[in-house]
Image (cartoon, rainbow, N blue to C red):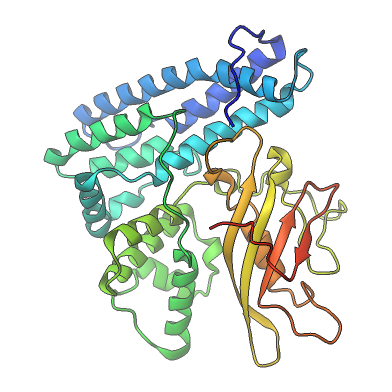
Length: 381
């Protein structure tokens, strides 16, 4: 549903301040740190692309704010905070689409070769959770000079589509690369079964020698792990388009990654997990008004205890994001979903086995989250 624009609607003083805050988010995403090692010619062109993009978005933000005011029927500016977060959600979602959008055949081939052969693709920089543009330019820096002009042109083309209708993106991988990496490392630890591609030393030390959890890896080390899995997947005969999509989703800076746990409630505030195993409503979802459905599949050991869980489908809605998937927020409930799925209390009933597939219906905190043993068929991958 596309809302009719109220282009001449007023912008109230408090909303001017909010627009400045939203612009700051955009500027942060398109900043190129002076300390980032770039060839001078590349820096000049990249900084111009970033400047043009910030100007483009700065012009769009007031219209987006007016559109959200219209959606809220907020003629007096009384719901500015809701409108602010709705526009912010749109900004983060455009950033997410940009990260997973494939290019033409030449761009895809160059990107795949770069990831395979250059660890520099994981040079994230000083502010890894907001280094969106810097990360892309670091990859172009690692390319051969002859490839850079075409890559920069492609980047400019991606950004010109900001705020416009997008092609339907590829879906999340059925089994996320992170989970496959964890299971591959576990096989090495338990049986000594070696992968076709040697595990990078930093990951072997962290995940095998030290036994750190995958979730504790830095964003840069996660990128190295995803890069290793891309090469391992290719060695196993997976299609290049499939492994590139898995890498993009595996390194995607979603809102959950960007904000980490900034909106989580402190312990003891009454928002703890329920007795039936349904986990607490995530603070990020509460802040941005996200709701929806996640479906999870799980397997059990001989005693009937759940030992493995995979999010198999998601159907998430977020105020401010319409006519497109809310990719930046689609994983908002994943961590809580997996946590609940491995809790034997979730979906349990007297005298019956635990269901292998459960569906969590996520509503705002005052409504609570519900779990259904029978999937309703609404969630989509």
